[in-house]
Length: 207
Image (tube, one colour):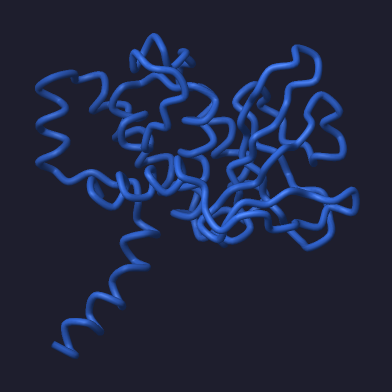
């Protein structure tokens, strides 16, 4: 029993770092239903493999550019419900996503490429020009500095200070929910975000 527990603890990080990945059986099943989806998944896998050789700043730009090319579609059209948080495997299989789906797949893709999960945050923001809600991925390279923003509406990565069009509301990852101070220090306001926890459970179930 002790040996089994050690094995489980040893392999958990490996699974997390390899997500999203598809088995050959999954790819065969997807290919039968929709060959285009299978090609999309294979292309994504190739992109992630090729990114591994680059330094962090190039990885960020390549991931942001590549994933922003996936087609955008509102949740109420693709999933018949508003504010659906798709897993990366759902996004890649379906081929369409909303802003939160882009942020989520970038979050997991960068973890897959070796980025520290504790510095990556799904970030709920207000789009100042239109007044609507939006989600982006924030990456804190260093403490007390504005995070870099990976946005599905922009192929260019800028830090938050340069994104005058965005007002940050909350920063979310597995460590909790945070707000940000004018000095770019994170302040924890809650231990978990229900939709994020539901997403993580879905990812574990369909790993």
